[in-house]
Image (cartoon, rainbow, N blue to C red; front, side):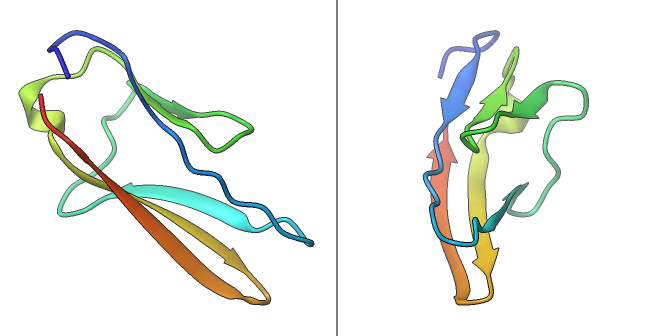
Length: 75
């Protein structure tokens, strides 16, 4: 990604009941004040900078179990 741009990381998780979806960054925190997650569980990172580079993990949890997917961001 280009520094200063907005990045979207999608996470599609469906189920009945709907799973609880959470995003986190491996070995770090989501950029404070520069991220949001919408109703479709897409993580948006605003004004990305080199410190935001890394692996982001989406975890979906329900009574049926847990599933996770990761995305790597390079800035």
